[in-house]
Image (cartoon, rainbow, N blue to C red; front, side):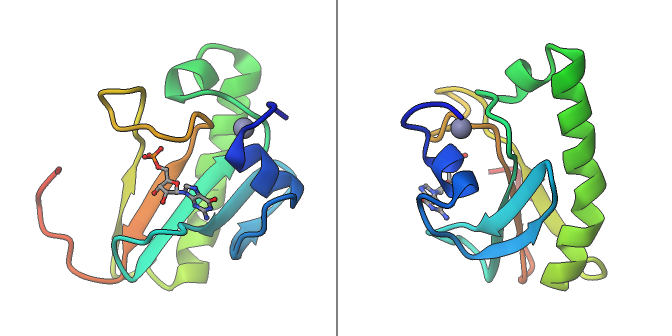
Length: 117
Ligand code: 5GP
Ligand code: ZN
């Protein structure tokens, strides 16, 4: 738990969220400001600042692996496993990261087109 981290507070329940999926290491919850009909954030419960932080230790890589392993269940829960979706990770200031607890945006529920931005 990192002090003053919004997503750590969502994980602990201090800040409420609409949960989509949860297991012992991963939480998926609805983005408060959705950009598409489906917009879910998938996070490790343990705090890592970003993708570089989580990828820099064996323990972090194990948590990242857990997150990827949860994806099929999250996609199924959201009903996008057949239609498809986009998975986005923003890293750092120029990457557009505003919450410094690593998260993946799972976006879908409409045709997103081929664009990256
Ligand atoms: P980033 O820009 O860091 O990749 O994405 C942060 C995301 O977190 C944004 O899409 C924003 O809408 C979402 N967000 C910020 N604060 C909260 C919150 O308190 N609850 C939820 N559910 N989402 C949040
Ligand atoms: Zn955190």
